[in-house]
Image 1 (tube, rainbow, N blue to C red):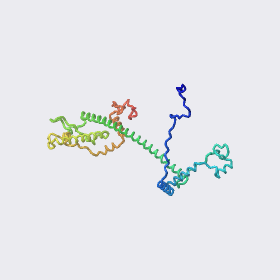
Image 2: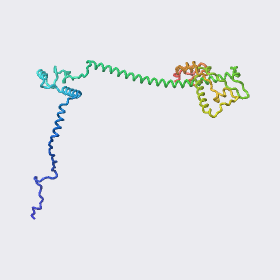
Image 3: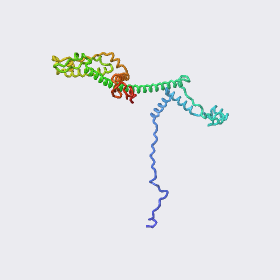
Image 4: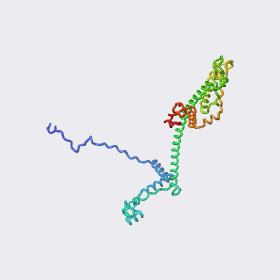
Length: 325
């Protein structure tokens, strides 16, 4: 073998590079249109040409053409542009004297009017709409403020009602102590006759004062207690009615024993105009009357929670709650 045959020959330009060559896709032969397809296509085109556009389509087309015309600048072939050019106008410059800072480069925009209203109708509508919106906002603010004030007043009334009940309880305690002291001193000569003396059955029973004779300042507290007690007795009697013989009568029982056992309901005055009139007052006014009565009669300051030895009440800041802050 010849020595030259062992030397590898370099590839020439004429040889094909199979790694970089591209394979073309086979071309699809053009399909010829058949007679039936051509007839269907021509019928569809004729139908589209003969169809009349609807009013909505005509309006949309008119709007589109108008918008395109308004967005297009003045063509140089028009009479108006030629007249402006003769007067020295150049595209991109302003009209009028040179150096005018307020000169316009673009013409005024066109605002299309699609309704039949007057020129100032839109302004009037905007004004009315603005007034209605402002009135609605003011009404919402007023309602919000009124709601807050109402909630604050209800909270203050509930707090004052609690203070009124506390003052009633204090006054009831003083009235009860005064009544006991008067009985001990013999200031009620008819007490023994009404209450009864000590007998073989036991000590004398306590005389019940009618509700209408109680001081109006704390009568409501007693009335509420009596109503709650009557409801409690009614519920108790309802639960015990099945297991108790109601026909049995004890000869030693009196009216108070029968009330205690639930066999006789305690009579409560249903109507009390004086109490209703007092309860109709504002809680602050009722509290003021209670505090003044405690100070005048018993020298007791409801805010200091202290009973002073004399009417001067030295050391008390005042009669109102604000004085004790």
